Length: 364
Image 1 (tube, rainbow, N blue to C red):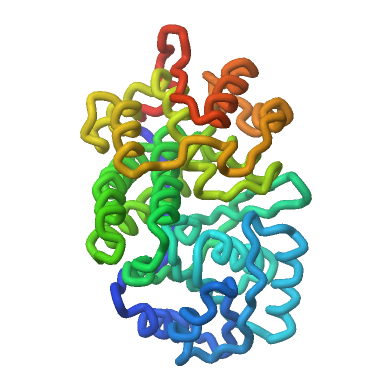
Image 2: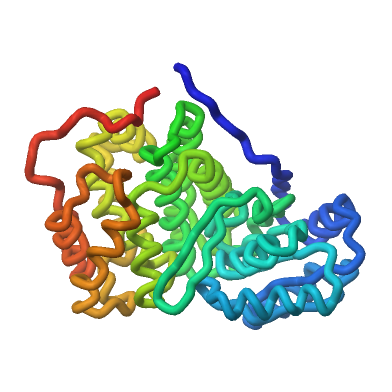
């Protein structure tokens, strides 16, 4: 039990049905007098109801997935023009990501109000895309000072998007199990996050307007993001970041499709993590538990349905291998090609055809 764990400094407010008041309270705590609201046009009406009492200096609508560098540049210029002293992001991971990109260079504090289960709001990870290359990094400046979770804001989210967004959150919890800096605290948080998501997502699918399922899923998504932020990015996220940047794939759907394949590849090499994941999914094995959950949720299974071209399999192999480096001992050129082909076609995951090797540093 020799380890060092760092907990990120952030206020988290769970306020079902009370987001407008909570956002106002958090902005006041920051002493904000000129707020720039970051929100996609599709959520502008919602943002107006949530920020009516704020000292809004500018509402910025140019929100693009994967945060292209030119989009980030224009948002930074807008923040400078309106002399913003705080940012409020409302929406999914793209809105949060853009606010983080602004904070990265301006140091403006962010209040994040998620309307999906993206998890970006609870991490100090930023991402920017330049052409077909997505770059990510870690910086304390981008960690939102406060997060306001209001489960009632997710009741109108389409069921399919709820499912894929929730599975993206699940990927945070699973990847945290074998992240490069994983410690016993991360493993405990990740296991509980998987348990919460496994309970919440089926409830959301069964009753999209019900509050209880969304609350449980938000709880799981938050814990997963906290664990992931501490443990660091494992092979799953490295793969998905390369694919998303190269082919402009939808973020949550891509993570949902790839997760079972990475789990099948990594589980034999991380027996403690595999046992924890299986227990959280209440299944004999992690692979069986995830398959059962995906069946209940009617989850997406094919990268080709996300827009990835078949010839992209070959072109993605080398960039992914360069990104994962020593963080995925089971990932070779052949195993990665097989993984991508199966994920592209929507075939069942293919576990490695060789005996398991000792755990790669999951136990502490």
